[in-house]
Image (cartoon, rainbow, N blue to C red; front, side):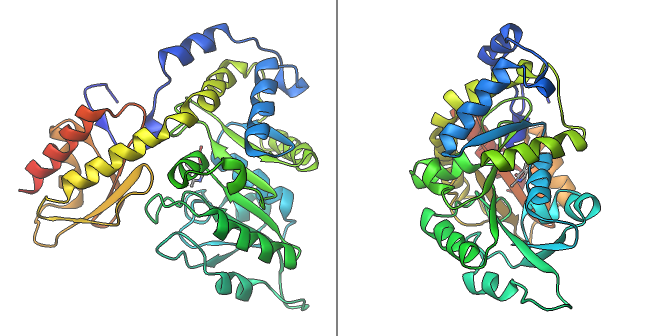
Length: 346
Ligand SMILES: *Cc1c(COP(=O)(O)O)cnc(C)c1O
């Protein structure tokens, strides 16, 4: 999309910075399937270290990273407990069942993005010839559909306890785990301590053009590397993009509070707008709003009308819209957005 738009559809729209472009041009590369790409190796070491895990693997997308994690933790016919509003359940094209033969056991996401601990406990299958075998619990942090809400260290530890007691693995879909750590003002290591594996995206708020990281034990990553190859995700001179990932880790993880502040500012500005029904105050970089029934415009018309003012918003569900702040949304963009929505709904 061109630069005159304030593009709030997602943080995936972030184009690489000039510094990233330069790093990409100059990156040392090698054949990463032979593990010869020194830039990728550096990125993987850094990601593992930052999350406090043994090892990590660069993957083309978050979707592939989650799928690989599920396939490492589960055999065909095994079951995974996850949120009914989770990205893995709703937005990964059913890969776990289509490609992994893994059965989802969805549990309601609460308003705060959590899965109720009792719901998790009740969803673990007992040993019985009729039942699937429960192998894994998945959490999503931040939880996107529930409003970009962060799950706390305490909550994550509680789920970790349940996993441990029942001999289950814990995977965190941490596409935006650094947003969660920033929102909670904690070290990301503490947020993922009980997790056996974590996926996070470089390509969202961390501004890289492509790529996600899968993090876990050395044993987990060795198996994951095998599955990545199986799924066609073994890449060659991929230091060309891993170089941007290093800037994501070194610099972009440290500036997310700015995106969060801008989401909050947008929320404050939109509070006054009649016709808009705001959801909870944003805790990270997203805010959702609904449209009052008295507004006659269709969902599509709302998006198109706002676009005429140079602002792109995301359709989330019937009468529900999402705004996501990121590196390329500045203070002027926040003002422009508030004005645009005000004008369309007045
Ligand atoms: C974006 C996203 C993913 C998947 O990442 P892709 O790189 O788009 O495949 C997974 N989980 C969550 C919560 C996401 O927002």
